[in-house]
Image 1 (cartoon, rainbow, N blue to C red):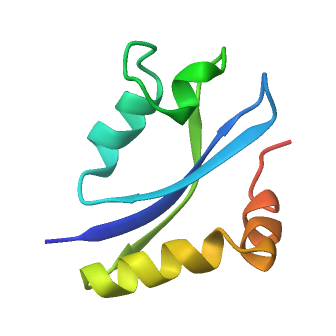
Image 2 (tube, rainbow, N blue to C red):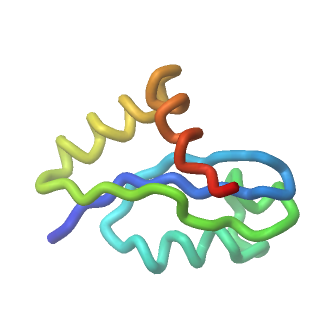
Length: 83
């Protein structure tokens, strides 16, 4: 099984969401489904994946997600915003 940490970006609201999953395609589709009741459904416009990492274990995935949600991690992710 593959484990992913990822970041999606909404250019209309200038928001970033950092998360983790085992099914990256399904998860990104959920971010773009307005009926899916999560953080990203509050914002208009589409979400695009700007960053992803594949990890070997669930523990590594959780640890890396926490790192990316830190100040330095968010600074790193912002470098991947297109344009």
